[in-house]
Amino acid sequence: MKKTARLSADMQITYQIYDFLAGPCLYITVPLCIAGILRKAVIIINGRNYGLKFHAPVTQMSLTGRTSTTSFRVYPGTVSGRNRILYSVSLLFHAAIFIAPVTAAAHWILFDMSWGVMPPRIDPGFTRLFTYAAVVAGIFLILRRTFTGHVFAVSSWKDYAAMVCVLTPFVTGILAGKLAGPYETVIVIHCASAHVLLLAVGWTRLGHMVFFASGRLVTLGLIKGDDV
Amino acid sequence: MNSVDHKTIKLMLDQKRYMREMLGACASCGLCAESCLFYKNTGNKKSVPSYKIRKTMGKLFRSGGRVSRDELEDMADLLWGRCALCRQCYCPMGIDLSSIMAWGRAICRSQNIEGVQRANEE
Image (cartoon, rainbow over all chains, first blue to last red; front, side, top):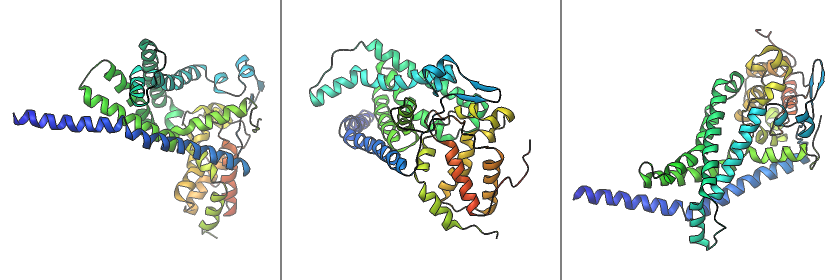
């Protein structure tokens, strides 16, 4: 009897944590995430006034002369023409980590409960596909980081921590969807790790997306950059 | 003339504060290695551009410019001995690696350190 009462108290705390993470906590982490991204954008814009340039070589020079592939011509100076496997996996990974959470029905149910807005139904199989894709591509990137000599040489624990930070919400999302493991604990870890991820996007190296987007705009010629 | 003027280094770092953000945007993907002639010719990890900027300007930013002369000489070995400033280094984030290294050289020069200080081991 005493044990049942104890468990019940634990559950109550778990539900309270869940209620906080799935609700009010978003009002803290989302603005902080946006503020972090805006801060980076402002630094880029200010930096440009002090000489910051995005370096976007159009073609690669080699000792034997100028080398150029179809890919260089189509996507000048981007990763697509340099390492196609990494390009494909990276594109899949980054697309999946955006698409999966945005299309997840469970997220929209919460949104509907709070705001009364429900988008057209998206097949859960679609979300599941991108969730698995994010995890598989993430594992590929971890393996590449570990077993490619020059990538391992420039890696630190922070790079692995960043990847764990990104993958945890997806792995726990899969577990929660399949009702595998202790559901309440899994869903609390899922919510908590998603909040950590949101903060990390704004304030750590995971914010490289801001620079990536700016770099692409330069490469495409939409912002004046510093093409070689 | 063996002392280091930390104040000048700090001032120079403050002038290019945005470089710290750019260093922070490095995803350590290693793609820059494939575009560096030094790395392609030697295969030495010390020639990977992201390694070079982290061990030089990254270190300077982290320490707020408080580095010893020995450390500055180590940096000079990387900045002059393993970089030709050919500007062929490619970064998917658009980080201008060579301009960061050029500023590293400027900081070394401000302390009367210029060129390779010790012979490379390879």
